[in-house]
Length: 226
Image 1 (cartoon, one colour):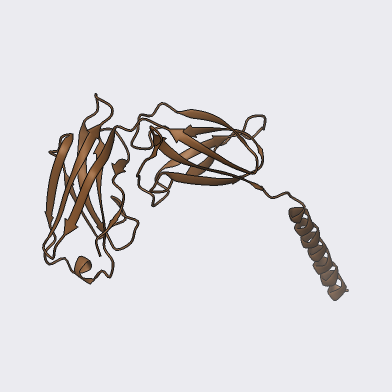
Image 2: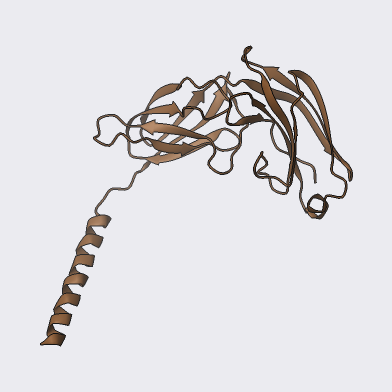
């Protein structure tokens, strides 16, 4: 009798798993893609791409659940999301990113593969970057272009990484400079005796500038030094 009860219980559990499994298989999978980039004047911004540090938010109206879908932005300003076809609002996240936080919003109809640009106003931009490294020093010359006139620079950064992902968190070496103004900037850092740099098979460099009050920096493109 006891064994019969056990078999009945096992049969019920197996039947439950079969039914719930079939139920899951019956759900439609999202088949549309939203791809895009974060831009200023049509040019992609160079950002921190590690640690899911910069996010956009997607909202779809007409549903009881209004929690946003997080969209993570890469270090070249690119992003993508696999979605169900429909109408969405793509919104910048409050207090996140090296740009004016005014909840920039675009309305987008997603069907198939849909491409968009999320235009923002960064506090600063970096141009004319030239970065070199010797066995003893890391040197950079670049231009800090002030876009928002009321903003001040919190710090500039010299960064080295052993991978192409280089930012204020993911790096082999980083030096911050606080006494920096917009315009042409020359920075230098002593890297002599740094074993991690000496042993790295590949070496990538980047400079960054962070505005006062911003949670993220704007960066130059990544340059491979070796």
